[in-house]
Amino acid sequence: MTKRVLSGIQPSGNLTIGNYVGAIRQWIENQDQYDAYYCVVDLHAITVGHDPAALANKTREVAALYLACGLNPDTNVVFVQSHIPAHSQLEWLLTCATPLGWLYRMTQFKDKSAKQEQESVSTGLLSYPVLMAADILLYHAELVPVGDDQKQHIELTRDVAQRFNHLYGEIFTVPEGIYPTTGARIMGFDDPTTKMSKSSDAQKHAVHLLDDLKQVHKTIMSAVTDSGNEIVFSKDPEKAGVNNLLTVYQAFTGKSESEVMANLADARGYGDLKKAVAEIVVEALRPIQENYAELTDDVSYIDSILAYGAEKASEVAEKTLKEAQEAMGFLMARQTVKP
Ligand code: ATP
Ligand code: LTN
Image 1 (cartoon, protein in one colour):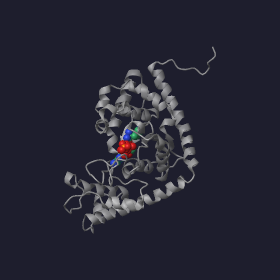
Image 2: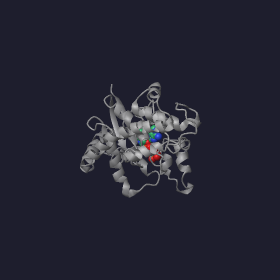
Image 3: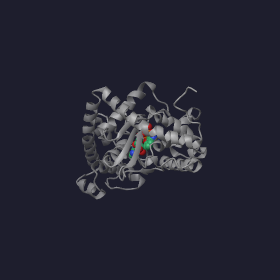
Image 4: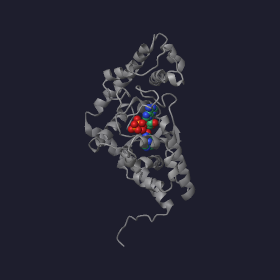
């Protein structure tokens, strides 16, 4: 049987090569094998401060990038999370079945809330993983392709599904996360000890999919390394910068570690390594940027894909929501109103 897949990215900044390698590339590589749903999770993007004037365009941009990277909208359902009210509705039902302690344990909540004034941390930032669980469980997704940083959220989704099923009956499929073998966590070029993140403002931190290609080259050439000169894959924290560059090279070429080392045998130092990585990344981004320009030439094209996607997604989501409501004992609304 074809497996059901769901994943999504928040329109909370400019998509990075981390989002590409950790998530989108997995979606594309296996797109013929799955019955897949990919959403732009705009409701997640408002959990930290956002710009209302930019949200709609960002949402469209992320959807266009899914397609520009190679996702086929004829065989995958591509949609916007907020277009399907069932996501917010199921979230509330699941929230009431989720112990608060489970949410306080989430490291992403701890990290993101620590960066804000404690008084202004939103409740949404805490309940965010429950919304993610709703996204996944509404579609009975069996597999969720994401980067490493989402492991804890996937575990929580599994726990919530199991708890709900135990309390109210077997409604939800318990999903599994799938993670790329290479590049599940790309680190920042300015600081190889922190994950590359699209919401970081730091200069030279990330390469974004739509960055000017000269800038891409510059950012990679400025990557932080170490004071040595040894080009090796290594878990030594001292060598995190070099390891990250090699990982990016490996992720973009699809080669094994030993093939990567053989390819780079002539590199004399870190300058040569960075140049090789920059060339690979620039050539991978070039066709994506060309596709993106073509796709966004006609604004209504992306909107029509999203409208079609919402129709398909809603068929599945509405059905699951009703099942969950019935299982919890709600009086179901009837079609005919006149007594
Ligand atoms: P934000 O900074 O807004 O929290 P983000 O860059 O961490 O954003 P998300 O929208 O949280 O991106 O993640 C979208 C997908 O990209 C997820 O599957 C996530 O695991 C993956 N991802 C994000 N950053 C990386 C990274 N540095 N390396 C690998 N995968 C990543
Ligand atoms: N929390 C995820 C984004 C996300 C997601 C999802 C991923 C929201 N809903 C459902 C997979 C499936 C993140 O990457 N920050």
